Image 1 (spheres, protein in one colour):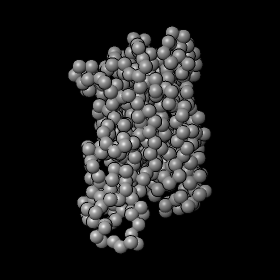
Image 2 (tube, rainbow, N blue to C red; image 1 turned 90 degrees about the vertical axis):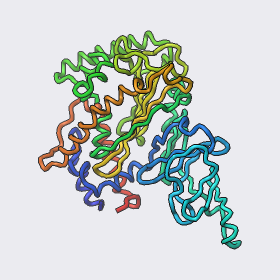
Image 3 (cartoon, rainbow, N blue to C red; image 1 turned 135 degrees about the vertical axis):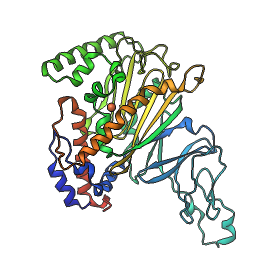
Image 4 (cartoon, helix red, strand yellow; image 1 turned 180 degrees about the vertical axis):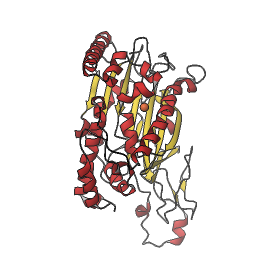
Length: 422
Ligand SMILES: [Fe+2]
């Protein structure tokens, strides 16, 4: 989209209200949206998905296909899924125990470390052939406590600065020593911003998610959803008192409570991390509150808490003492997204004995099923000529933060048009 048209949209934006329709529904805005999202780091999976040398995971990110592979030296690397000879996709699916990558077009082959090694080259090319110029093109990859992050940008944001504040808490909760037990994904007809705004919105939870609502105290939700100011203030005071009581009784990781990371609109990566108490009697964020898998990490008993984190606008990680869930939004088009949930438990837990996969997954499978129609209905409404940006409730302050973050990043895109693919 031409920058004048984006500027015209930006001028319509009023802080404190929803975004103007075009931000959700205009297909021409997608390249600018991708441009502002691309420099960030995104979760591509967990190292337990590729435990052995030659195990690969194919990952789609912003239209790119990337091969994540554990090399012969056990180091995890990422390469664009493009043959350096004639561009064919090297891999069609994730695989186990590959010895090399072989292109199905002309049989060029590459080591797991991305070096071109095909014997067919020696026959065909003379001494002007430079093999190193034909290695696979690497993709930026980092691993944090077992979580594999990719960036398809040539100039990604500073990974260490972004994620250092997360590492201690992820280590204590045993994220590196977890294993993936299920990945479920589906697509929905909505703009990616529709989903971001939903996933950071506590105001809708008591309306849409009965079992999720029961995991927190009535005061917590009253503060998040009440319609009368005095009720909100009283509930917030009560919730704060409950938080203090939980903190006073906390013996494990006692100094890491409340808001650990939250710079809101001013955070280039739009990250946040909060650790807070569950409702009385809840050991874990599950239907009914009982633990559904063995304790993870360094825990010797439940901390009766939950960790909510956003790693960027599109990826979030929710952790309980016995399991964790990763949620990923992937924009496929201006009006289509892919939503993926990944569940993890401790790597030594035995299915059938220590946990039942369906039981671990039922809580967020239900939340997903409850949210799916909301995403599509919200997007459908935004396509109507009757749509006008509505006033955000005070409890929707995170949505306001996200929108101001998005508008700031979009303005930067418009000001540096070289990054805009028109
Ligand atoms: Fe929801």
